Length: 223
Image (cartoon, rainbow, N blue to C red; front, side, top):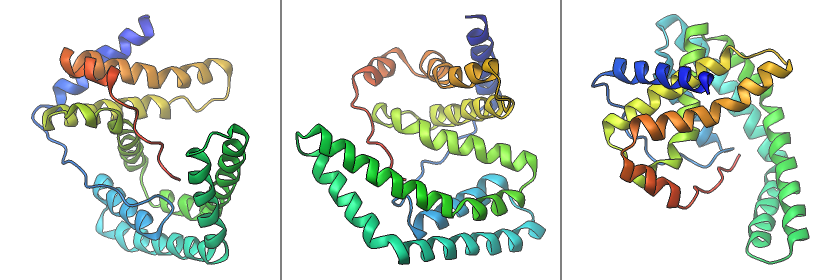
């Protein structure tokens, strides 16, 4: 309880410090795993991290390398991936649990393979950034995965900015929990619940909070 309270206090400080800063509402993101998604993520990274003139050319070079790696993987595996996606979609609409499980596992295996093919390119992109820029990007990614839960309750621009600020604080906490010991693992596992608590208890109105509880969960993002 004390740990959660410290997080909430920190979240409130971040919210107050954010003042009137407003976060722009992002357009619908392209489907993950596509060249368009890679470029969109690169554009967001550059905007969030405020790349210097010296960084920009190297960053573009590394992003181009990631695009090339993805295109090569898709050329070799694109048809197989599309078939797995179609099979998973068909299975989800049916009642055969075994078929659902197999189709989901087959699709996940391909997505994992695709992501592994991009690991080196991702590391090269991150290497261009300073630690402060990496922290900013970690916060942006956490915000992107968090905000979907709350779009149904139509948060104001001010609330959206505050949610982003709290995501930055949560990402910073996660970054400080790199160890693999039991205590660090437990602390990492607790962050999502603390983030949810801080948003719903500090930022949302009671009416919005009640709507969150009854709103349908957002569809799982495709990887």
